[in-house]
Image (cartoon, rainbow, N blue to C red; front, side, top):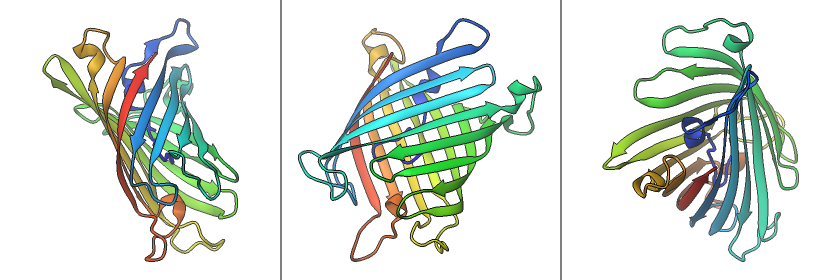
Length: 261
């Protein structure tokens, strides 16, 4: 999950608030739109507004997550993308527990999956990821996923045989007549400081969201309307090594509004 707003991401409130779908094949789905406004981004123009569409679902043999960002640079121009750009990910997972109709639970592990992600965006932004995934049962969490990916990055700064660790989570805290939802993800590219094909460096991307369920507080419906903030920390953003001449370590907070439907 490489999101410049975005995260995710990863699928926190969408998995927590999924809507049931009739039939044996499809179990539930959820869609949302998010608006974010933030400052102090690195590499790209400093001020960004992002509109994100997210879709999550579960079906007979696994689950899927998809998002696409439309990012606006507040009238400024990026050197490569112009005044706006887009970025998206499609992340299907196949559940071995569901496929073989067996309970694959041990310790905190609830299920074992094959996790995949396709990343796409402006110009030559493209990557393919595949590896083992685990659903974990951790007390207090609405859900906790842990995916290990073998990552292959295409384009002008390619990287082969890189490993990425991606946990994603959601945690709900009751507050008065409503709830606060804390969800998010971490993408940690762990082993690529020296890459035989050049310049895609190890990097760490942490994106939690803290959201108040305003819809529930206003009696408009639970898990429908959220307001809050997204914090985005990215060391060596885009795999570009931070230096005194070109800063790529990013730390920024964005205001957000999110609507589920």
